[in-house]
Image (cartoon, rainbow, N blue to C red; front, top):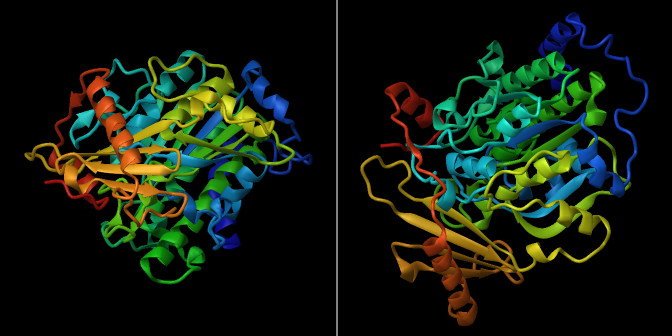
Length: 466
């Protein structure tokens, strides 16, 4: 692992940063990179006016394969460290198990039912207000660096970013092993994203900035040879790729430290969805809405170290992420969001107080159209609701296939208790019906025509589009 951390190419990119005067030397700061802080300082972050945000999305990262979420393997020591003196959300529900739909919900803070991103050609219209626009209008430098074409600017994800680029593949690709059984070779590696991110941070270290980094090697089960630690079956290969992700995340954090700005940067890590390993008969994602693809991480590393970690046990959702971050840094909220700022839940957890009322017994929805990649096929929607200890999963075209899970006795959702708990099932069905009937789209989505090149780029990720 240290061989990768000491890779000359990472430091060559930092050397370019040094050459333009961003730092005087790697050893400029002898004091700790972040000061000690208190829980009360969280509420005053909005008053500072000097904060940066680094928003890291690890594509296809399920929470329960990280050490900080109880995983027994040492897949993520550096990611774990981000939360050891920061904030971890223990129960996070993604809004879809397919990247474009899930990421649209993250960025708009709206359910798919509201933002309309269900099928392969759907795009976010310009009238949608995106977080990067709020940051840009407040004077922040904004940049997004990605490798997954589902979040490309043609689908509307570039709104508000002054620089929004797909990282250029570098020569180091041959160092990686690519093992995802459903994916073809995606050019480049996450190291390309890391190097581009480091260059942006160095060039903007004297400015306030928002940086969005979207990693893909976990999606591809790709990793450097030094992360070949855990074996050779699919789950092992997946864990190897998480370890490689962990190294890249540490490099980004190390860049902030070297430049002396870690103490004024909020680092956030989350995922768009998880990954299935035949818990419910399928491998991969974008096929169902069970826990293995819906339970995602959400960690916040603050500009200071807390005396002990804050663990928010309240049920939250991916649509809460940007309402929370905007609230933390004191910027205006997103218009008409479905998501909630989790700052009250954070402060309640820090003070040992009860879960705020808005988060108690909260119903959270997720959706996927099972024919999202079928060009000429009719819709085939499915939906899940999580409330309290229960998940109901409904395939709307076949109501007799409804499933109900009780996490108190079955945390991995293997036993359908629909017949055993009819009153719960009836209540959750009614909530789903009301949600679908009463929730109107916020706008008319774009209908994006994809040429052969873009379709082939998306197929290279392992998705079937026909």
